[in-house]
Image (cartoon, rainbow, N blue to C red; front, side, top):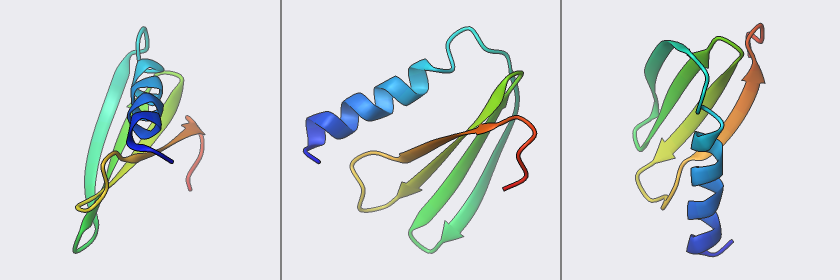
Length: 68
């Protein structure tokens, strides 16, 4: 995936938060070079994994009731 596609994918993932109420944010180390950001909204949860060498985080949406 080229950098422009990665940036567009990140932008699209973050735009899904528009209009939702953010109810909780958690930040956890994943390993020495990566971190996870959990953004819980009134409808679902966005998980973003950031690693030092990555241009853009990996994003995943989960149902609000998910315990994964």
